[in-house]
Image (cartoon, rainbow, N blue to C red; front, side, top):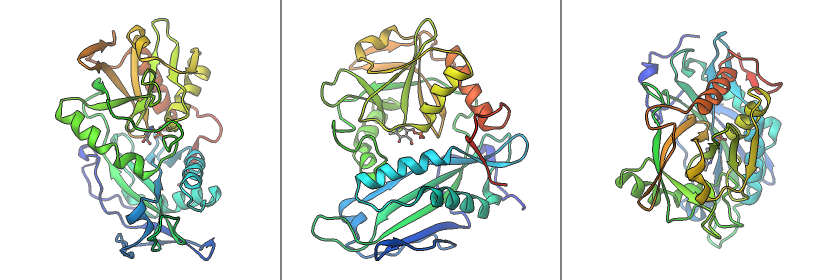
Length: 341
Ligand SMILES: Cc1ncc(COP(=O)(O)O)c(C=O)c1O
């Protein structure tokens, strides 16, 4: 296969139409066989459930080329499981886990010319998504659904090294105590747009949300879970029923315990104790770990000793180990890496 003629290292994080996408239709109570198609456009009724009541959920994962030249994906079974819980919470019929993984593999394989080469820092972003597309006017679930996967190449998250970011404590809430914060519903992101635009206008990179019931505990940002490192090298990460169970965060916890011998605490983390941590990072598929230099709490700055220049030493070790596993430089735990070709 000949790769597309793209300046991979200078790609941004944007959508680009690739050659194939996957689609399966749910009708009369069952999913059809699914197929790869070439048309990137979707035509639907004006009253489709997704358009009127936002009945949709999605996932995000990446394919990349390892040092050995294989195209691989990272723990897609966990994306399948998370999409299953998102679908159930939104009254969308579940797309079976084994079919999800196979469909991701098929879509990546069909678009192998778009998978960035090893060493460029770029990856192929994979976006599975589901939505109600038959008409509904009364508030109720749609009868018919689509499960789709699109892929698009994206550039390196950190160009010229990871620079720590500044985030602010948000006055808006991201999730209600028994709401949809723990699933990847499109509606969670629609309602975060106002807060993120406002944060950017005020010079912050991201919003960090507090627990909506008491506004005393750290939850997560709009698109990533949070990790902290104590002064004596313990990894602390917030535990809450209203945050998204990040696959990157769960992998980092495993790497910390089993590869680096670190102590890990998953527990509620109060905003008032954040000043005592040595390092802070945001974790998610896009950046793996994005270092945080400063949290701004209504004008009061909490600065992490690791500073604004580079990642702290523990964050760096976690980042290097996890990306080493992903890129085939370090042996992966059983089942983490799916080789596509
Ligand atoms: C709200 C939110 N939290 C956390 C994450 C990180 O999850 P993952 O590591 O599975 O990409 C994401 C990104 O998917 C997200 O949107």
